[in-house]
Length: 587
Image (cartoon, rainbow, N blue to C red; front, side, top):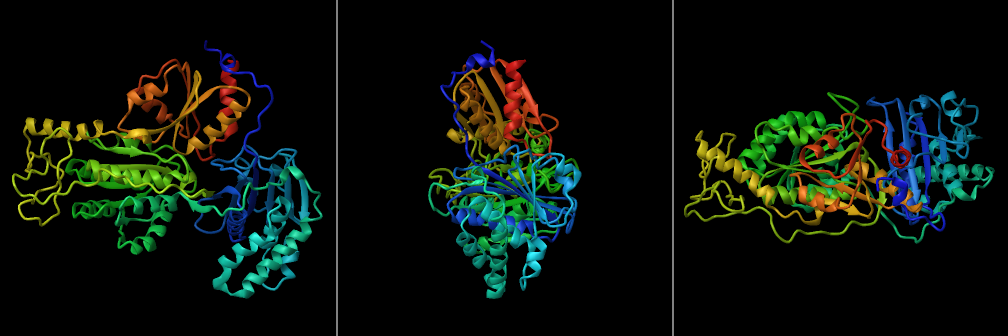
């Protein structure tokens, strides 16, 4: 049957989903909300909580509006809720610009500095308003700052131990001296004391299951670690928001493993230096965003044609053109899959969580090296720049594959046609194993050729090696059962997963399929994952429904299909997906 409601198993009682607490801290540029938000998150990790913090700001280099959006929980969280429990504003300048991102209701607590005027757009959403003398208390402390007073107030309200904050502040401010630590702790204690006057609301207390320190990591940092674990030892890149932090993390850490990072003069130089480094035998990677990827496309085709392994991490942002550098969108899918001219088989993968940025980048490197081609990793701003408290990711080592290097000069043919499609490579300078690697079509020896036979052989070879490779279970996350499926990818996985949990709590049976491997297509695997499905909702953060159209072009999807394509810059929320599925039930 196609009736959504008929697929449910009526629950005997309502089953709650993950308990959590959502906090928004607002302030103008320089007010320290990002610093305080990060310290609150790290202290939560010290106390054994899970959590995440998303930075939201305008396009300005400095100044302007700023918001730290946090969610804390005793269980792992991968997305923000639909509403915020607490909004604290150090000041109200430009606060109305966040109305679309920060949703309040009558149960929310709104905290502002004494004497401030709450913008009408904020007050209209509801919530209980409380004034605290943030600036006044800070002025009474030598070296005091309102953001530390605000930090103490929040810690008290949510039941976060002060000693956890003290440990974080001591570590983060140690370079500034004990006076800075003492001033900050004085502000924290003053804020906590003031917040004690706010009536206690037990529902806002989040107690962790155990005191166990979590990893505090961003998706960009995780991608950098995944690159190193994958064997990358050369990085050439040009800074661009929101991918720059990958380079900032790799610059010092590559040195620890004998690697090198070069800041190129532009994206064209970086991708070509990358190809040169890889041709020389060193696994190589670059990080960029949509505008940079567009500039690199021709040279990525060179890597495919010359079968030179390279990895390109694209931390997507709103587009087109310069677009919205500080906000997220999944709109680079088409250029990543179809952007290369000619028939150019390559790899496109996408991490589905902050922790998964580590594995997916490591896997992309493994695939590039093993299959001698270009791998594009589609991360995005919401994954890359969000900091999360997560359990330590598993240490994974791929025991097979990797670059096939030979020094045998007997009948060496760099592009030999064989069953696997993967031919031996040689290190430049190896006697008897020299070859030409350029963008011209070539014979098996690498000699440029315009013969139809050579062209067809090499086209088939480059396609065959990707099509025949066994990608294993890494191609997608599949879980659940039932005749309803939600098909998604990348950063949309978090909100989709939580929405499905909400539906399952009501007794519905819903499958989740999040695709990590986007290219080459895996029609047989997806067909198996969709067996018995009668309705499929395709969820993506893209105005043009690029993922939906890609799936319709390469896969046979069973039953009724509905597209939920929401453009950036506002992130998809679990409530959005939940409401879409419930509306389909009543259609």
